[in-house]
Length: 110
Image (cartoon, rainbow, N blue to C red):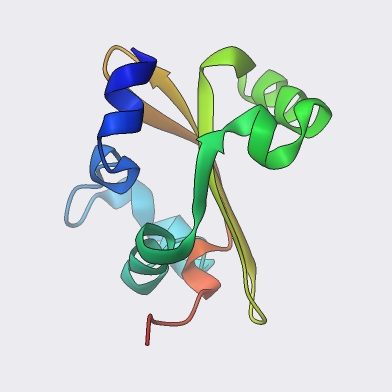
């Protein structure tokens, strides 16, 4: 399983339908945007959640979401405008996002 994750571009594995009704609150709160996703793809760090966020924070966030931290991965990117965080559970060959924070506040890639 880990081999498949490391050989693929992680951003390709995250999928959001073009206009899902469940995303609109995230868009309104600027938690997600196309510019933010593109910036994560180009510049963000991707690894196991415990590596990116530290064991304690990753375990706490996974526990709040009711998922196993050992199967959580994420993106992290800090800029002047925002610190974007994504944590997702890898299960059944796909990611389920369990934390999405400030990705929509990232400015476009230059």
